[in-house]
Image (cartoon, rainbow, N blue to C red; front, side, top):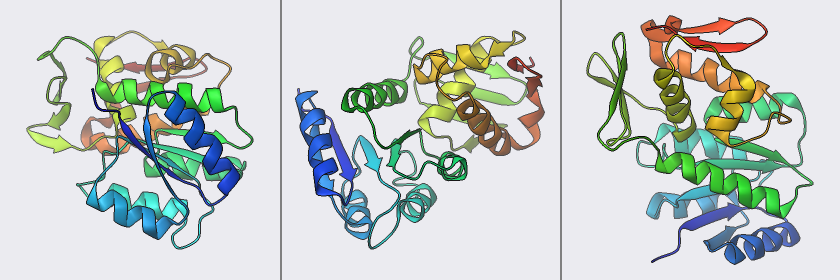
Length: 227
């Protein structure tokens, strides 16, 4: 079986080598890029299964690279994990708003990075019964096709947004706590910043347009999707 190909975009050689070593030991094929513009060319030629991306890069910085990838239908669905020394909350929120699937601040545990990447790829692979469709109002989610549409018009979601909507649809009418969503959608324990959930719900609502109000906020608890 061929190994999944990951791209690491990191301009600090020591960090790039630590990531390469640990990810290859975990069974992945890894290509490393030190510049954002070089990575963009390579991704457009051959999109990887997942991208690990630093924010502070020469050529094109990580946020701009993310914008360019998410605007292009050929690369918009590539799962993306941001890895950066910039710890300010605004940077994390901007990255998630642009469509990053996860955000890991430096310094990091290599084992944690591997576990989070596995979780993102597992979410990307999807779950549920093949061919099963979930519906609420005008929203239709097709698990086999990994597609969401509203009145027949496709809504383009990231892998994480798709998984989040899938979980809410599965449990229509029931309140889902942030801790439960972090565990089921992200594969995290509840000691991870729960604002990750809020950011993704906000993006998901924006993409759902007129159906956005189906996702209700239950103050102090979490979210519920109305049937």
